[in-house]
Image (cartoon, rainbow, N blue to C red; front, top):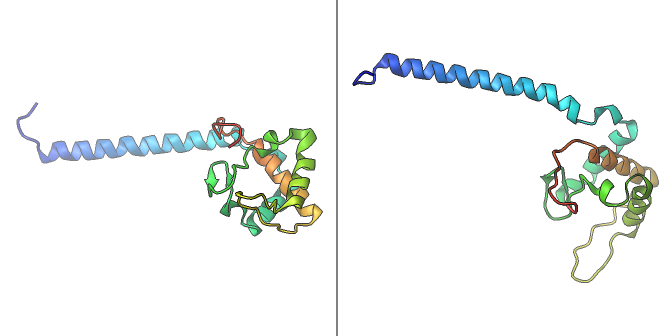
Length: 146
């Protein structure tokens, strides 16, 4: 090895390193594009899911709740609420009752506001949360209660 670090050596390290990281980026982008369709839940997206997402956005639910780890940490994670609260058989009745009972007015507990959603909006929001729970998230959240 040479005793001095030459301009040519620096240039080769720069171009070689740049090429390596460009190829690494392209490989990771290709892998992501290949894997995401397998892990997403696009096949089960319905009009009710789309309307439920709109209800979620219009009422700023993410301002308090997290969904798949994104959002505020004020209220519980809702990415797995469908599984936690009854699944196919019990989730919709639970969710309708929960939304109708708000605010709970329990001393020492912060209350969720009453949004006065229509029955259709509550059903659509439930469908959105059901759809979200079926996305492959690599077992996120790490505990059942989010």
